[in-house]
Length: 249
Image 1: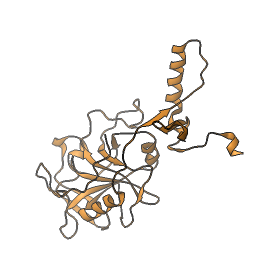
Image 2 (image 1 turned 180 degrees about the vertical axis):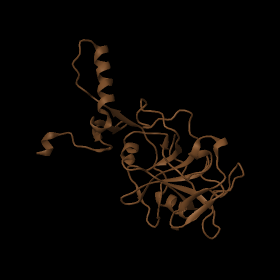
Image 3 (image 1 turned 60 degrees about the horizontal axis):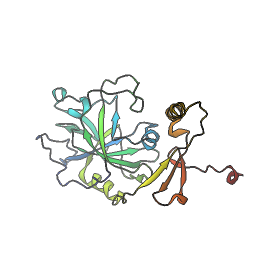
Image 4 (image 1 turned 135 degrees about the vertical axis):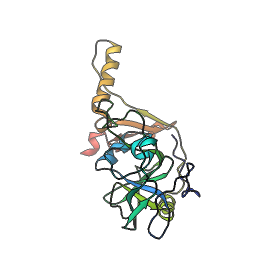
């Protein structure tokens, strides 16, 4: 998925299915939703590319997005208005297609944009581990733009829960801080591991075992712009890491 859908929607207060979004104090419509990443999730989302963000264990949400089942949608829910510090009565909670701003704390920063999506039939407790136990339900956000490497400040918002209603002006202000997305270009990414084995096939199997067991938290990956290999840089934990021990001395 390309990171290009960061435009403020002129119809944020309207839904194709005719449902009415949450209303803030004063009658303003909640045009979007702010989703707060759980502790530790920011690093996981930064390390590995995911098309969607799945959050489990959320309560107090209404609508298809909360349960993944239209038949289970509730008629009303109470969430918290970001920046208002007051309760919001929702005639319908987050629904598929609603815009989402994904944020992280310490300090509060915007790290991604997306839209509420329907939960898939099969969900896992840990989205990074396909062998983890199935989860009972998930709130799913389909990413439309990611800025995990360069988060932008989200001053002025007050979030009192994992999902908060956002008025249109607050959402548009967050989008404006991102600016236009940078141009996409081609990169060469490589991972070289010295492996002792009896056959080439065994060496390949050992290679993938090391990649699976160590992953991006321990293995350095080397990246350079296509056609400019001299600009190669090593990355570990999603950040540039010097691999020359002589330069550390």
